[in-house]
Image (cartoon, rainbow, N blue to C red):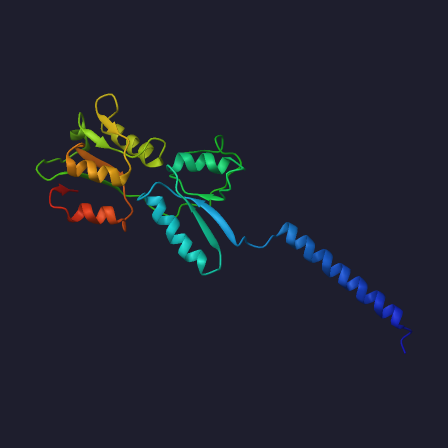
Length: 210
């Protein structure tokens, strides 16, 4: 009627399908679908980042994304894993100031998502009104290589408390709590998650104060 034959219609359909296929392929390459599984580097057991990773795991599960939670030594190890293309880690948590564009030129930050609270615990039999009074004591400040230790040391240094005049002990939160209870450390200066069971224990134990 309009001069079109079945052959014309077939060619038009074939061209339409080809164009649609090319567009779909281009979108799949340029704008890939979100992954169904990702690996996130958190922290040591009981660390603040472990709590954050587990929170995100629950949120992403609602979108059918499976999260592989990796236990690490903390921010410094997370940085190394993110810089290593063969580590399998896509996301990692770390404190601000641990890295910069020179140390990690290929990494992108999604922004700050959380404030970190550092807690000081020591025996209730003692009194302390200032961080300077920690000088000369045995203080648990987080494992070697963790962002918690790096930030703890920076805060203490402002008050003149350094590794030169004080024993700064590399302990995980769980081990630090045990050490405070058995008297092998004089104080704990660590970043605990507000919903950490260990923090709850410390806040309810009578022989330690914040």
